[in-house]
Image (cartoon, rainbow, N blue to C red; front, side, top):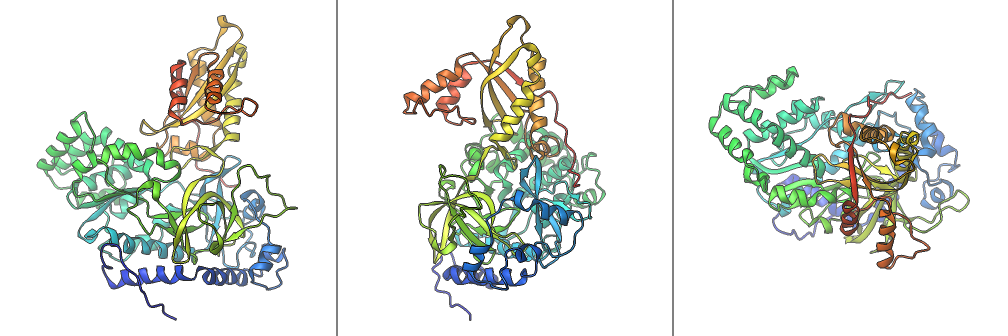
Length: 598
C-alpha cells in the first residue's frame, strides 16, 4: 500500500517527480523499519534455505528471527574462508547463495595479507543503484541549482584479477563503474560529470587522472561540485595538478593532447574536447605558478558549492588540508557502504563532518548490532553474544555492525564500530566511529597492530648483525604530505657503537617493513601512488620512558601503562619529534603484482 508522504522539506521542495518518488521511498522505508527488516530476513532465508551453509544449522524452512538467531552463529571472514575458496575454485553448487555468485568484490580489509573476497550476486547491482538514486534527491533539498552544471569527480578503476574458476575479483567501485548501470546510465541533469566514461574506465592511473583533470579545467566554470570517493583521493588530485599543471596548460593553449595519453578510446574521446584556448591556459598558469595554493579549488573552480568526499573515520585527518585548499567549502559525506554491503545514506548531507550520521536503509540487508564494550572478553561459540535488532538500538551506545545479505553472508561481522546519534522516523542514525582493530590508514589501506608488529620483527632482522635491537616503537599516519605515509618511531639499543647500523641499512629496514605489509598497502604504494614511502625516525635513548612519564603525569596508571602503538595527540608527537636523531625512508617501492587467486 502506498504511503502518503507528510514530509516537511528543509530548504527547497523536490526538483522533479523522480526526486519526489525517491524521497517517498525513504519515508516508506524508515517509518516501520522493524517490519521491513522482518520481511528482508524472511526473503533471504527462504531463497537461501537450500544452500549448503544454511542447511547446516537446521532451520527446517523457518524464516523467523528467533530460530535464525538461535541456530546460526556470528562469523568472521576467516570462518567463511573455506566456503569462499571453494566458490573461487569453481564449485558452482549453492554453497552460500541460491543465486549464482557473479563475481567477488575485493575488500580493503585483508586476511593473511591478501584482500578479502566478498561473494556477490548480479541483483546486488540493482540494490546499490537504488541507494545511489536516493543521494541527489536528498542533496537537492539542501543545495539548489545542481542541475545547472557539472560535477568534477575523480573516479578510478583498479586492478582486477580472476579466480581459478574464472570469476572476476575486483573492488566494489570498479565493479560498479564497469557495469551497464554506470556506463549506460540514463541522462540525469543532476548527475552530469566532467569526465567521460573513457577517462574513468582507463586502467592506467596517470592517463585517467590526467584526462579527468584536463576535462575539469576545460569546463571549470560549469563545475558546481568537486569530489572523489575518499578525502585522500581528492588531495591526490590536487597534488597531481601541482606536478602537472604546465603540461595541462600547454595542452589547453595549443588544443593538443599530451603524447603520454596513449589509450586509443581515451585519446579519441578527449581530443574532441580539447580546443585551443590561450586565455584559459594563461589563467591556469597564473594561478598554479603562485607559491601559495590556499583556496586553489575555489580559485580554479569558482562556482563550487561543496566537496563530495568521505571525511569520516580515518579520513577525518584530511579535513584541515581540504579546508586549506578549498577556503573552507562545505564537506559532504553522502553515503555509507562497503564491499560486503551498501548500508545507507546521510539525510543531512551538508552537516559538518563531526556531526555526520548515516541512516541505514532497512531494505539493503538484515542488520544486527553487537554492543561494543572494548574490555569485554572475546566472543566464543560456547557463549554466543546477544545481538540487538536495528529497531532496538539505543541512542549514545556503540555497536559493532553484523549483516545478513541476499548474496549469502549470514551474521557476518563487518568490523565497523558505530554510535547511535538519533532517529529519523523509526530508523536509527549512526556515526561511524572507526574500523575495529585498525591502527594505521592513509587511503583504503588498513594496518592493524599484529601486522605492524610482524613488519617490525622482519625489519629488525636486518640490524641484528650490528648487535642492535628495537627497544620500543610507535607509529602515526602522516597526512601533512601528499600522498600521506606511515611514520615509525624507533628507540634502538646499540650494543656496539663502533658497529652501529648505517643509514643504508636503516633505509632498507623501511623497505623490509613495507614488504611485510598487506597487499592493499603495497598496491597503494606501487600502482595507485596513494601512499608515500615509509619513514623510520630514530629517537634518543630514554624517549619512551619520557613518554610514559608524560602519560602518568596526565593520570595514567603506572601499573597498567602500555606504550601506544599509534599516536596522534599533538603534545606526544611534539615530544617524539624533539628527540629524533636520524630519519630514514624506504629507498624503493615494495613488490606488488595483482593477486593470483589460488
